[in-house]
Amino acid sequence: MSDFEKKRIVVKVGTSTLTHKTGKTNIARVAKLASVLSDLHNMGHEVILVSSGAVGVGTGKLGLKKRPTATKELQAAAAIGQGELMFLYDKMFSEYGVVVSQLLFTVEELDDKTSRGHLLDTFNQLLAFGSIPIVNENDSVSVDELLNGDNDCLSARVAVLTNADILIMLTDKNGLFDSNPEENENAKLIEVVEKITPEIEKAAGGAGKNGTGGFMTKINAAKIATEKGICAVVMNGEKPTGIYKVLEGKNVGTKFICNR
Image (cartoon, rainbow, N blue to C red):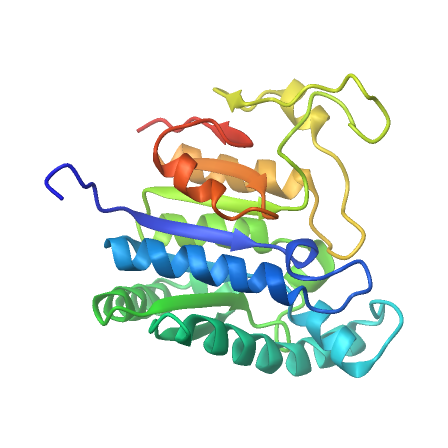
């Protein structure tokens, strides 16, 4: 293990990755993700998971046919779904002997110097204890992420706060394309982005069916991370094992080069 390089890895997973088109939880996908992250943890890496999905899981548990639109309904669905989501994560990760922990906070707390310091202390201690922190914005209190789909940027800010080595954002697409692959069969995957230009921003698409984030929020997240020397990757979450290749330096999805 002399050539092993320990990394602090922030992985963000979105609603579209965690749920089926029916809105119900994709249990097999969650199980795969837990398996890979547990294995990375056992290898000696420090792993932080930023997870969307509370509203989606809550919507499914309530038996609603579609995602609510009223803010108070979204907050209620999040309150129901967050407990269900953590129960599922705890069950899946415990199969591999890994202890998970829950951190719910708002962007305002990240902006406050005192709260930010306490939060960093908590992250560091949880990682020192050998736990995988699972993060979400406190949707029952804050509505920013609910309405703007900004858990991508939250994951980037968590990566910056904890001085992570890499940010990996899992989505339901293979990465960023130069045009919409659903409309253009000749669309090409952009494997490496050395600089986020207006052209790259133009290539970013809109929100997915079951989530609120789109590629624009991922571009914004990549900006936050790379400007602080943290490389970012956007890849398909269907096969979480692709994370191994990312850590080996191979091109998977779209990699945003950092200034480090």
